[in-house]
Image 1: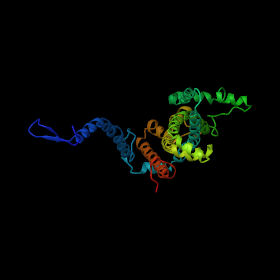
Image 2: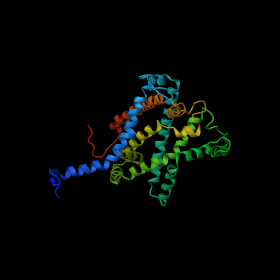
Image 3: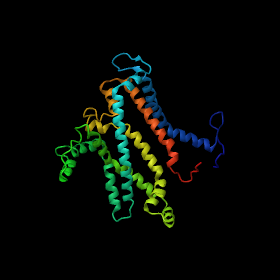
Image 4: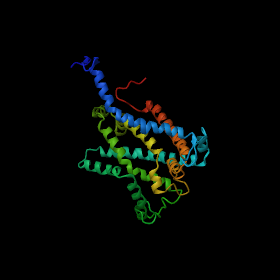
Length: 312
């Protein structure tokens, strides 16, 4: 049946005229409606409820009392706000600042045409498949001062054992170091982007006399910039919500040096049962994430290249 041709139904007294396009639209709406209903109930509905709860002093043990923006102002004035935000941003900046170059460098190596390179690609990605808690338990052993693998390797070089997780000096760097373990996941994305770069661009650049660094800077980086943009945005969103690693490995210590924003939020909600206060904390974190994400999106026009895009 040709598109746009009306379909007539003679069931009942009236006639229903449906074009092919409207029929397809109804089928599409029917297929996506389960997800949409679940989204409204479990995500959008929960967010609206959380925002309303943030305006109350509520702990479910005593009657809720409306406090307006009181929970927000109290949390901003709390000394743990600045401390937890500093710890979170510290680990975010260094994890992204080290993790992205490491992932990109690994992907450049994995993109080489060598015999058996598929095996190394698989091995490099395997750490990303290990579940979070198992990874953190493993790294607790690796970073142990007395019998950890890392201190054993340092000992071979004549370096004294480092108390990685038990001093304020080394606790955050140790967690940043551990985050490099998941660099394989990002390198797979970069590898896919590298293999999509047209070889004609490299050949043209070589004919023009461009060296390796010049080809990397003027061909490779612009071509994979959408992938860099994606990993940066997802890295910021995930980094600001870092929680499980600090809870399992250090429980926020020593002396609150690894207490992140999400860890304080978790304790407020589930240990102290201050649901209204925790909801206000969650919405402030949401605002911070949205602000940073928007800044990255606004800056993308200056450094992200999309093929076929017209620049003003």
